[in-house]
Length: 128
Image 1 (cartoon, helix red, strand yellow):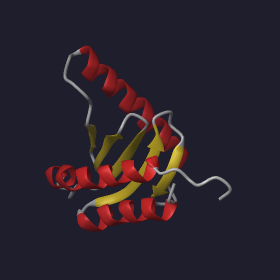
Image 2 (cartoon, one colour):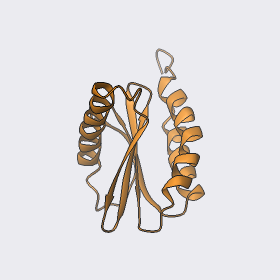
Image 3 (cartoon, rainbow, N blue to C red):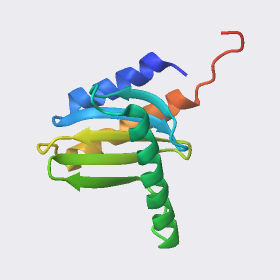
């Protein structure tokens, strides 16, 4: 996996959409893969909680016959947290402040998710 390419995707999304404060990519089991977050954020804890939340949302979508889960958004008094499925094996977390345009975020995120999924699927050659 190309960690530099992953970091560029996360940083590019942050630069493209005003209001994004932090981003992270995690495996579906909650293990942190990469993070572009403030030091005050517990990156591993964020990855674990996001995976649990996404798992519940996936289960809800399945039980209610809503199809394949794409995303879930949690709104708080100081902003929001958006959780996006990256295929079946990973997820991306995007944290935003009160000024984040969530519709713009969703539009900008899909191409980034496709590229992140491709990066995560890359195999490292043996012996490297």
